[in-house]
Length: 251
Ligand code: PEP
Image (tube, rainbow, N blue to C red; front, side, top):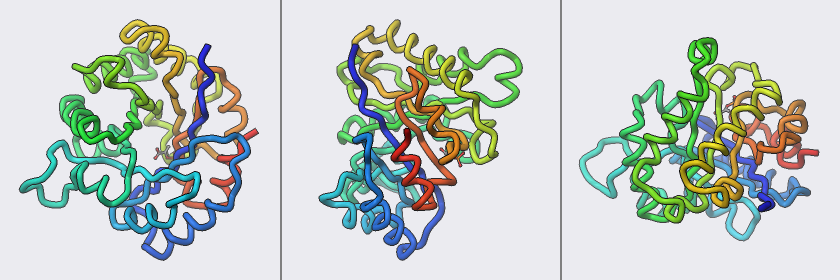
């Protein structure tokens, strides 16, 4: 079976001034990477170019947190994949639950954003996850399968090569509540099964599936020990250099 390189990604959300972003990336550059993980940071758009410049030549890759589906045009406040790439991003997060719930990104909109990212060669970190209500109604797997089915609609395994999936239960994001390692493993295995059924076993075996939702220095080791957990997407603790360094260097 394919050995998957771990991915540790930090989503800085709407945090950090330029100076704070610069200090954080400088600290992370010297934080070590004992697992040879792919280390990714996703600053806000105002810090993107600066962070990308400072990360150049290091092991850290820079992602944006979202892109618009058009390359340019009258879309006040939006940022296109062309602009994100120009600023130094090589990846983009799509479908983060805050984008879905606060900004109204539907599966259909996300499918257009997937098209835009693929068109411009941005690696996608595609987020999926259920609400607490959906979990309690035993709808978790159905919800996630629908998010994957509709968001990635129209693309082949070849076209989606390199795509990263992040399972982020909505009830665990920024709440301090983490899915148990067993809960995470159960959903990750189901996502891998979805990928196998839809795109073939080889694709499923090669695809990295990250867990996100209150990942901390104190719980990362047990989460990363799960066979289908290939990395973490981290919010709160990605803003703290020492905590994120410990997460990158998980045991
Ligand atoms: C996130 O924003 O993707 C996230 C998982 O946040 P937190 O780690 O703060 O729960």
